[in-house]
Length: 140
Image: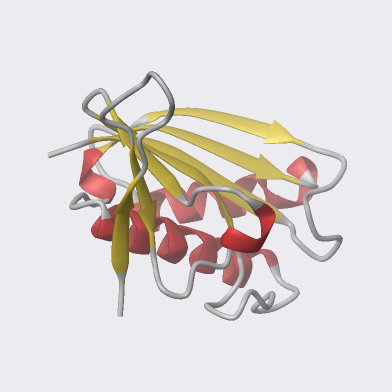
């Protein structure tokens, strides 16, 4: 069962915290997403299942799970990947995985493709993670 909670952040009313059940980010004091000002800001999603376990060692499996997690959080906020206007993709090996990133974009995103930033990083939060995806979407 999914849930959404509203958080009034000090002097900034109207900030809505988006959470799913289970909320695998709660122990880290991170919101899965924040809805504010007509936008949904989804925190970086990795290739982990609902129990927080990494799904596999290969890039495409992790990437598909990361995008599925993004979809799940967006759905909880009343949106979909069609509402995404900006994507941030973080990978640990650009040379090896750029082609896979393009494959994932084709599988999960559509015209007009959102603005995108692709970065290689030295590591992600867990050493076995190879990709993390964050998005900004229009709130409907």
